[in-house]
Amino acid sequence: MINQVMEAIKSSKTIGVIAHKSPDGDSLGSAIGLYHVLKEIHGDVKVFRNDEIPPKYRFLDESEEMTPYKPEKEEVLDLLFVLDCGHPARLVEGRRILDEAIKVINIDHHMNNPHFGDINIIDVEISSTCELIYDLVKSLGIPVNQAAATAFYTGMVTDTGSFKYSNTNPKTLRVAAEILALGVDKERIYREVYQNRRLNEVRLLGEVLNTIEPKFGGNLAFAVLSREKMKKYGLGIQDLDELIEFIRDIEGVEVSVVLKEKEDGGTKIGLRSKGKYKVNEIAKKMGGGGHEMAAGASVDSSLSLTEKNLLLLFQDFFQ
Ligand SMILES: [Mn+2]
Image (cartoon, rainbow, N blue to C red; front, side, top):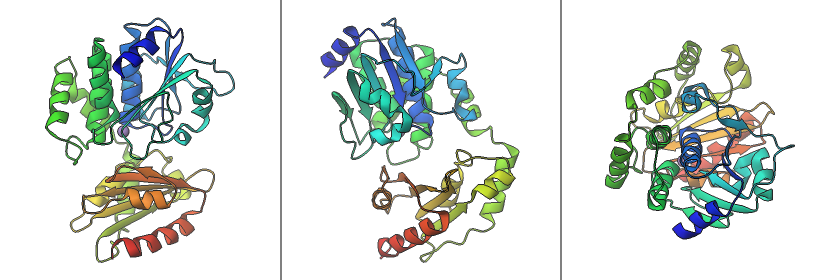
């Protein structure tokens, strides 16, 4: 496998790196990190921005090296790395670059990844795609510079809930320690990612929290964010992503759900669990996927219909 990856890098003239749309810390960290690593050994590497970068992650691309992906004009790449992407559909418009690339290396940690690459490096037990890529880069013998280390560390911190979740094990912490020793400013990462809340996000958070009524004997905390409400505070669908974890952490609650109304009238579903229930089972039934403790889906149905459908599913789920 390692030799195949090195061979693919060496024999390709043009290389691209892309991750899923609606980026999070792990997808951005793995894409930007791998880009900085590949640049050490290859002259023609591009990293694509498959979406807007949320403000709290913009520090990862301060020099703005990410190329905005334009489906109508992208060249055909000799080699494309697709990262942290549980299904090709999660690339959305970026799907075309995958279909056209001559060779694809798929690196991911989501369950049920359909192995859509020519080379597939999938580990569903590992904390994050960033940890997986770090392991790979190490065995390839390519140096990890400070920019790459910062990106990888960010992905590991965000996908493990700052090393709190069950996907954190002794090896995760050993890898994190190794990466940290490469000159990562971890205080800066915490400040950028967690201490940068906009006042309006906090105000909306307050408004929503005031209405939380746990259901199913207190097991489920459920919150709904309409477009109207988000607009009132000047926020969009990518904002207030801490709400779902905040309400999961209510005493007695096992599972949290946040529904956000999309611009096209559909609904984005987020699901989190404290550990007793596997929420990817619910996500799968709604056409989505993810990890056992953190999953989601995107559906065409309205907020109210989606809420109704989900509550029916949860009725059996908590039996
Ligand atoms: Mn991930």
